[in-house]
Image (cartoon, rainbow, N blue to C red; front, side, top):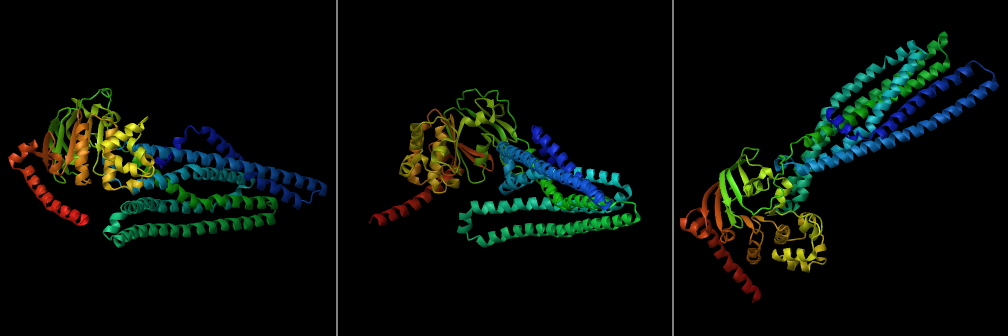
Length: 593
């Protein structure tokens, strides 16, 4: 409930709308209460056999007043719906914006432990539930409370004994509504969680459809989806069952209250203790009072959805952002010196990825970090832009601790090319510039030429304006990699980081790219992460990692002379290359022949 109240307070600058809604609610409730009182006057006048002319005049006046009241109620209801729904949508709009901004600020560790499908569910279903809860649901709750207070007060004023008899039924209705709310709350929490899980399964299968089909996983994935879907279905069936018991029970007791009003009221009329008009008014008041009670079950459902949604939303919004830096050195023009001082890092699951790692890279030096899968290479790269913060030790650029830079300034100084390069559903130009302003066509062309991407872009029907499919669908792995390299070069950074970025390139393209990049590496600090010795050979300094620790370092020749892990990798990979190349040569000769 506390989280839903926090969401409601987001519209604190909407007091103008809320004032209009409040006035409209008072007009609506007041008009509704006046209707039975006017009808009471008509029936009492008919029973008392007043003068026909006077009776006709009173009837005409009453009908006119009723018509005016109906018009006022229509206007009031319009204002309630329009302005309160506007407030709810304003809150929904703000929460979506806050959530998205928050997701962009959260550290990578949050995404490591949170499923994408759950986040998508929070951004859609949960926000919609809170929007409804702070919009028309809360409006109906307030109008029902106002109406109930007004009706009960009027009934007690007209005939308090009769009112007590009729109202004795309503505590039972209230208890049933309360029990329903308590019973259904945990079920809606479960529904929201299962909806997120279902989103996750669907999202993973749609994104990885090629893998699913390649490994003939359709049956298994369908079973996984069906299990989640069935769990959601069963929970919704439980909610439907409880609702199917509660709603008719409320209707039955409401009908019983109306019959009680007619029966007891008729007895009072026969005894001469009450007029027929009063009985009519009480019967109508009872019906008016039953309607809010009937709505209690439905409103409880909607309210519990909103509470569960708000809980999940604020679970994200209350997550701790990346550590804020002072940005005291943001204006510093870097030279590119990088130092790792006894750096250790463990993931939240306790896995140690780096242990007492120390390395100094001079400005303009090209260093290659080599190692097998799981050796800690990618973790090292992720620490440099502060995707994660080191568990122990520190990292500096030009002697300045990374935590003394703002994240934006730090990351703008570094050009990244990752092993898995993400391309957005946008044009090639947009994917290359990534928000950079005033980038000329000639600059774009130079960056893609340096990345060996110019030729294939020229062949595309719309060149740089060609739209790229989701996650780069339509481009080969090598083409996506070259676009990513061009993207990094376009920023003209003093530090370049390549995380196994030539792994998806063929040997010919890799050789041409390396040749072109050598000139671009001048006056830049380059950190290359690789598994292939061929990538490391031209580096000024090579660091061999194993289980998060440096086991060897030196130049290519020095490491070969040590006859250690590097030399073994070199021998294995060279032998493999010698085995594969003759096969490729034979294949080319056959095709040419």
